[in-house]
Amino acid sequence: MRKANVYYNGVLAGELTETPDRKYLFRYEDDYFKDSAKPAISLTLPKNKQEYQADSLFPFFFNMLSEGSNRITQARLLRIDEKDHFGILLATAQNDTTGAITVKPMKA
Image 1: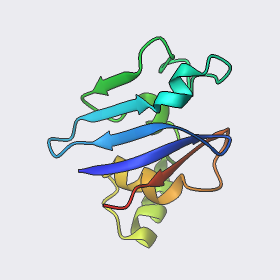
Image 2 (image 1 turned 135 degrees about the vertical axis):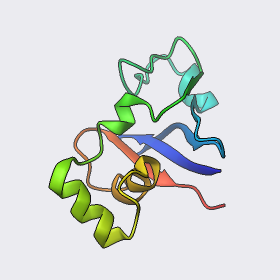
Image 3 (image 1 turned 120 degrees about the vertical axis):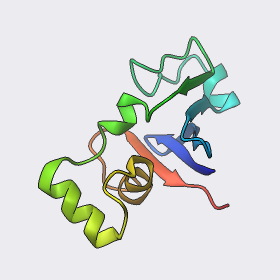
Image 4 (image 1 turned 60 degrees about the vertical axis):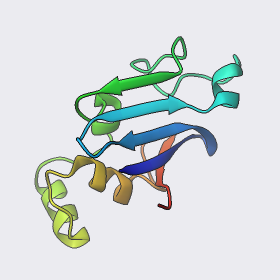
């Protein structure tokens, strides 16, 4: 099982998990969820629910990934299977992302 912390402008907003059977969970952190002044991380993951489940990587996170030849180059340089969406997200969305969201791997 792989996990990552999701930050909104540097503030811990939630946790993203890939289960062994390749299902995905996103859960807002308790304090972030309870604070009505803090926005949802995306329109597709509103704060009307604390936890979301999906059979594939949530589109919001998938759209943070590069495409085409850039993705192939990243995968080769990082030695990650180019179909490993979660692995590429963990390797590339830690610092310099477009927008307010960063994704940082959690230590096992």
